[in-house]
Amino acid sequence: MLTPADLLTNTDGIARTAWLTSHGCSRRALTDAMGTGELLRIRRGVLALPDADPKLVIAARHGGALSCADALRHHGIWTLPRPDHEVHVWLGGSGRRHPHPRCEELCTTHFSPGTAVLGYAPVVDALIHAHRCLEPEAFFAAYESAWNQRKISASDRRRIRRELPASATWMLDLARPDAQSGLESVLRFRLHLLGLTLESQVALPGVGIVDFVVGRVILEVDGRENHAGFDRRHNDLMRDAAASALGYETLRFDYSMIIYEWDRVVAAILPALARSVA
Ligand SMILES: [Zn+2]
Ligand SMILES: [Zn+2]
Image (cartoon, rainbow, N blue to C red; front, side, top):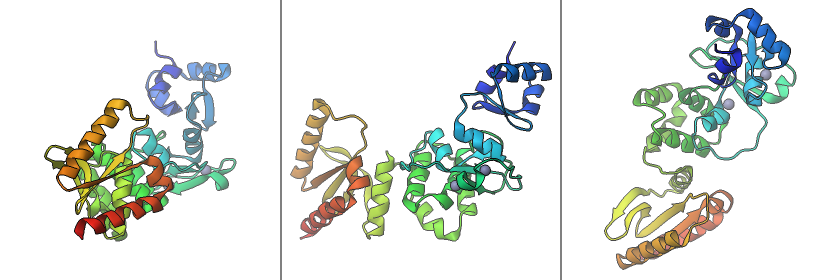
């Protein structure tokens, strides 16, 4: 027989009592599970496993689903690291906020069409909310990451376009489905703001597919978590040599440079571009 705890593992560790009883848990079984500490009562009618995501629990206390960056991260969408304790809660179109401790300090409430369930907000809703809360480049990178991973459909993209303000349209027009990493998205976004238009995922004979080409400059983004091994480094050197033979200069940037040393990135790209058109 499925225990209440078994059922909750399928719902991110949190559920309404009514849902549990409609799936075969007796009131008695729920009371017993609360007695043993197997289940916690979050608020009236809402139960959770003791190891449920603490932000999910606060969102449920507040009355809705966890959204914005935390939900996107949960769904495997690339997000810029932003240490925060804030809890972004989606209450659907007309949900009700429930009082709870530290709410003023922790919670940001999102109302948008739909019925918010408990748990993590779906990708499309989380993106719509994230547009309000994240920096534009962080929203853009998350949007491209979701599209690249096919976690938003064409109709989701139409909905996002409808629901975001007109001021977001240019970002949606700039977005592409082939960004291989959030870093590529951030690089392209920032260079777009500097007036540079990059060609993405360009196939060059003898070189292979490079991340970006602008003028006669190749920009490669190294989004690898681990340090490159010898084979990878050799491969990069071979590619750079082949690119040079075709008249291209290659510049490579990693996470740390793009996120923390952006000035150096710009200081490398602009002169290379000037040389390439000289
Ligand atoms: Zn709250
Ligand atoms: Zn938010």
